[in-house]
Image (cartoon, rainbow, N blue to C red; front, side, top):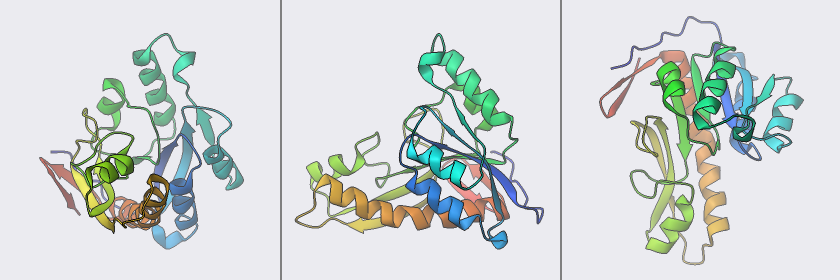
Length: 210
């Protein structure tokens, strides 16, 4: 059971990790403009340069860094380097907002229990990077998004929150993905704020707030 982290009344520092356009990041950047939200985005990191997510962070005056796998001899060395870069900003939470790399043992040893990921499916169904496609192919009537605390598995961590999105008969992967994003963004903003302000603990498969 991880220890709950208490909100001190000061903005809670978080690091956000991205790999692409950064629409989830933008929702967090917008929310963090309100002092009442209680979150300060200390830095945004990426696994590749020249992406829109980094541009969004830079436009908001947030420090950025890039940690590419190919710049290191192996994934273990990359994991160590990523851990060290994130730790520089002393975050209370780390949020994967479309970060497409699996972290390793070193990262989880440092940030396990406070590393969140938002996945575009209703876990435990359809883990992996093709959630909306897999949901459509299976023929489900409800898709959605899951916010969870990352563990050593692939999309297997304790679930924080979920939102459901009905699947329409004429949906394509793109249309379903976009509608999931529209529901995923406010869920991510709400729960990152709550977890940061109120603290939380992971107790087995349960995430307990406060």
